[in-house]
Amino acid sequence: MKTILITGGAGFIGCHVVKLFVEKYPDYTIINLDALTYAGNLENLCAIENAKNYKFIKGDICDRNLIKALFEKHHIDAVIHLAAESHVDRSITNPFDFAHTNIMGTLTLLNQAKESWKNDYSGKLFYHISTDEVFGSLGNEGYFLEDTPYDPKSPYSASKASSDHFVRAYENTYGLPAIITNCSNNYGPNQFPEKLIPLFINNIKNNKALPVYGEGLNVRDWLYVEDHARAIDVVFHKGTIGDTYNIGGFNEWKNIELIKVICKVMDTKLGREEGTSEKLITYVKDRAGHDMRYAIDSTKLKENLGWEPSLQFEEGIEKTINWYLDNEAWLNSIVTGDYKDYYEKQYVSQ
Ligand code: NAD
Ligand code: TYD
Image 1 (cartoon, rainbow, N blue to C red):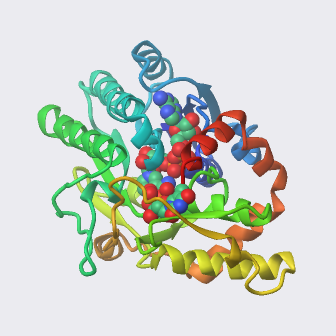
Image 2: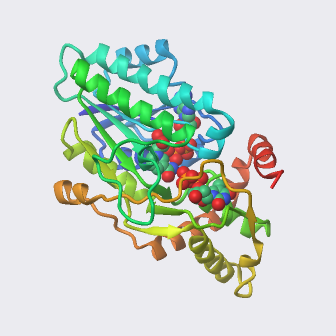
């Protein structure tokens, strides 16, 4: 019996984590706290919204009174903290929002956990979900390891790095039991179509240009979102307090190569002649300060806790494309006014 506060559970990764925990652990009470920003969508959670062990609370992680009341009312045993502003391009135009949510929001949760748990830390856990982007950018060789020095280069990664440092500081200063995981790029169902893969699937479907930043040579390491959720489950239950674990797919792709795979699969699915979607590729002005390469070494997680990715990329991308094609209503309903506005501003001058 545990009561777990999951933050950001209406977002992309959070909804998969909430679903996994609600379904797999009927004895746990899962409280999902989410502000429902543009990136949060309760439709992601239809499958479990009426489950007895699940409760949704709409609220902001920066709201200290709310967080205090929540801890007091529900006797929270553990936090799995995913809520964040998560899109690099938005962080470039709006860094203050990222500092506010990602730093102040994390600090608010940490401080309340410390206050509520300080007389007895046993059985308690603050599990902070972070990104490989805190390590900065790699050249052609090498991998991010758990002890790679932090070197964040975008306002997004700087805000996440800062939140990671606060987690470590609370652990060191107040003894708060905490774990951090740093994961590579996720892909899969329910991702907001501002991120590369769902954006390009949606654009191909609608015969719109595919805006490739720079020369498309940047490299990302892609992990299927359900594999990330499984890793979170494993680390939550078996991870060592105070430890940090990298999570990745050992699955590096140059953007342009990845985009060509998506184009090819989409041509087949849509019954278009091979090569049709590739014609939509349009090279646009590069992202400011665009990190060249991310690559995670997740050997520690495999060796210590036995986790490894379950899906090959070819299978994962096919499942992902099928999901977006089968869930047209989901895709259309979240392409909101805010998003259209963002899209126009983001790509207008390129
Ligand atoms: P997302 O943007 O899809 O979802 C974020 C969720 O947080 C949304 O539901 C949003 O409504 C909620 N939220 C935002 N601000 C809030 C606030 N102030 N209070 C309460 N809720 C708030 O993000 P995601 O891709 O699911 O990422 C989840 C976490 O995983 C983030 O911490 C991100 O840094 C981390 N991460 C993401 C990736 C990736 O590839 N997407 C990779 C590694 C780590
Ligand atoms: P993104 O999905 O935004 O994730 P991140 O920046 O966190 O890695 O972008 C993945 C890669 O795709 C990144 O190198 C930027 C590139 N990209 C484009 O070329 N065009 C686009 O329109 C977007 C959104 C991303």
